Every structure is written in C-alpha cells, then in structure tokens.
Length: 156
Image (cartoon, rainbow, N blue to C red; front, side):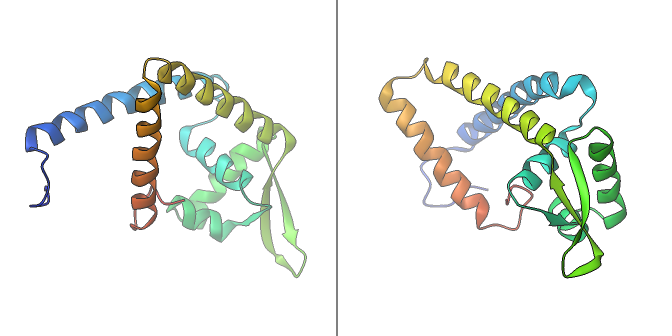
C-alpha cells in the first residue's frame, strides 16, 4: 500500500517488485553456482557469514538469528562443521554452553564469494553514469537503514 504523500503510482511499485524479484533470481542463481557445487545451502552460507562477523556465537544466538529452533540450528551447524567451515567449543565461563566460530576454511569461502559479488556489482555499475552509481548506493543505504529498524528477516 502506497503512502498518500507518495508520487509513485501503483503500476510503478508493481514494476519495481518485478525488477526486484528478477534481480534476486539473478543474484541467487550466481550465488548458488558458487556455493561449493551444492555442498552449502543458502541458509548455511548466510549463517556462515553471520558467524564470521562475530568472534563466536552460542547455539541459542544462532537459532534466534536464523529464526529456527535450537535443534534446527544444530543441524545447520553440524553440516558446516562436517565440511570444515565451523568449529564448536565451550564458553570459558560456562562449559555447558556450546560456542560456534568460523574456521579459516569457512572464512576463505565467505571471502571468495564476497569478492565475486563485489566484482559482479562492479561490472553492473559500469553500465551506470557516475551520478547513477552514487544514487544507487545512496538508495540502497536508505533501504538498508529502513530494514534495520523493522522486525524483519533482513535485520542483521
């Protein structure tokens, strides 16, 4: 539903929705080609990225981030640990608390895919003028800020 103060029409918003869905398919397809030839799922990759952004996370923190039960999060972590991307340990203050951190191999996977994403975005940006490039970044920054203030799955 559009705000009454908006100058954007419903057909324009619908076109934007179509564009976003098409772009997501494109990005997801490229990402899926890179995820170690089917060994790592999207959910596992996004979890790997999130864990890599922290020193370590507890299983309950992982479950909360993924909006899963602890048992379901354990399955994701098990698979990534078996592939050598994560390792488990115990919290120094409470040995009952399982902590998970990314391995060097996991960090290398995240970095390689991130570099590919950066290269692909750079190629796309070559089709824009310098002003359009700056506007694209500005618009995405605003959308990102908006998403961070809403209780949605896009929240980091």
